[in-house]
Image 1 (spheres, rainbow, N blue to C red):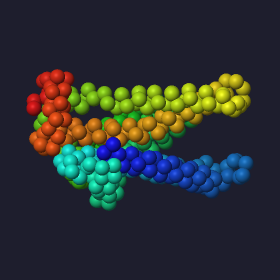
Image 2: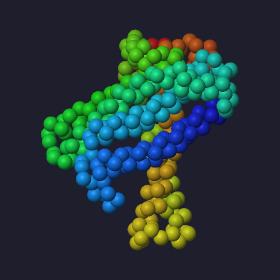
Image 3: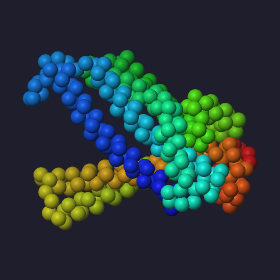
Image 4: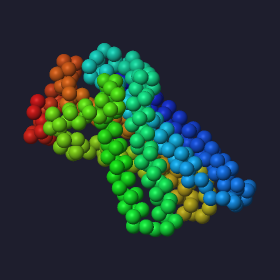
Length: 300
């Protein structure tokens, strides 16, 4: 319950992203109609300008990454404050939550934009290659798309840890990246990061809630006599709507948990003594559990 205000920021970010998506779709369609000389029937005289499409894709993916990473940095800052100064993180809308959010949108916003831009460019390029490949299949384009997907995954994985340092210590993006490499090389915790199953568990939780929501939506729609075409549609459409809504809303909350877990790993690798001072009981429990799970890598 403490610092639960971060959930409010998370769902506020979701609403902002939804509004941005609607605005982006309207602007994108209008631009395609305008540059393509399209009529009201959707018949276009010219092909879409590839550079305009690419710019629109970058703008969408970049904004999406910025919103997601701003939340990640805010969570990291909140957990970091709780780690080092527990008295500043003792209420629902604590000073830790508010200060971390303000730091992320003011002082650390440049770092967030830089790290997000890298992923956005890779995502936009991959989408363009995918569209070209579907027009005329090519082995080289398929390989290039696969290569870009691998780069995207690596960059997002690196950003996840770099932005923890941005949120906790206020480092620039470049300095945060250097500290990520330095810290885990020094501690030898590569196996701990690799074996982390938190994201998989949180995905299953989100999926489970989505399935339950979908079933409930189908039952309610059927009990109210709502019709969506034939019998199959009456069951399937409410289920899909409930599944999507339940999955998305739960994923937002679970992303907060994932960011918090990553921050705890970084803080415990870099400042275990401070955690012992601020939260001795939790520190003892964590030390015992991690020694049992990773006896060779964990040296504390």
